Image (cartoon, rainbow, N blue to C red; front, side):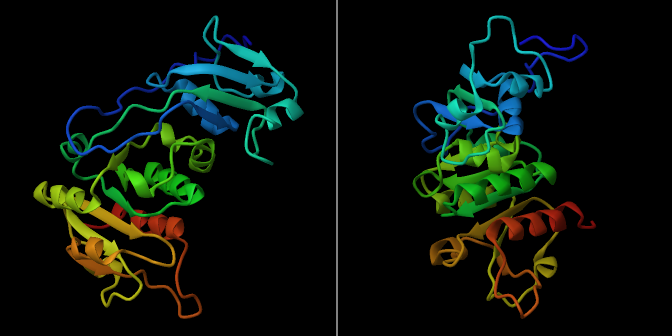
Length: 264
């Protein structure tokens, strides 16, 4: 369990936001995470309440840091770990059971750093896509992602694995009413841009200076009419005619890059 003394303890990162209004339900019950990046990030997050780590000795050796003394760990074989997670899940010798993250509230995000975009997801339910969007949000400095509580995946091992550690970094706000959340963003001075393939304006043309809320809809259905109506502008990414659309996580990454590199 102990490793090289030159490594720092797995105690890491603080700063999740609590308090305020506009939060929906978070995940209830225990969460089981797997894979080195997801487990390591959770172990470094002081706001995670860890319950138990199942691991191979090789898995523990791969972690960047030392487990605290007395940390609840059970060593197991690879096949045994495979029975603790989804079928064929790439656990990499590490499975962590922990409590869900604390609720994050919208007003705390909106009162934060306005130069960082907020990503709003309208009924994006695929956990792989949400995880990939969290990863892009972390890479390009987004302040948070915002979803409706009833139409988004729960916090899970699949989301965490796809996010590659970003679940512990990017605040995830769950709201009861997404349209009302968009109204609150407008009141806070955010320009709300919805991505829509049928829009006339290209994304770069609709991108002003100032706070941005980037609004993306589910694959296939796109933005719901009411949510599109709560956007200040609709815009499309300039993709070639050979492809009708992009995966929502790819579209999010491109739009976040455009926001991060805009001039002015």
